[in-house]
Length: 108
Image (cartoon, rainbow, N blue to C red; front, side, top):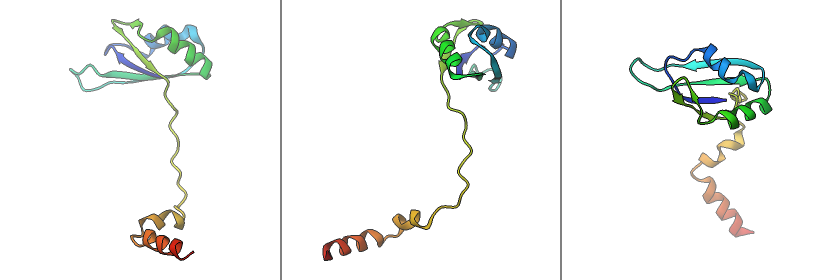
């Protein structure tokens, strides 16, 4: 789950204390920006989606520390498909393929 507008001084323990009543927290990751900028955000992961949904509904816009937080459900990162592209995927890049297809369709 994405947590935005976090106060720069919040710790992982602060986030855990604020959200622990919604279920088992498996991970907290706080991202801090360059000093002087207040763009701190983070991610919190619950054991299941139901726990995350309850936390989102209850905590969205609530003050944690001194700032009202923004919450969004984030999709887990996926490993990119590393299989080589199929030859058919490149037919669209052939500048003559559309002309050939039009000519063939006229002949039918």
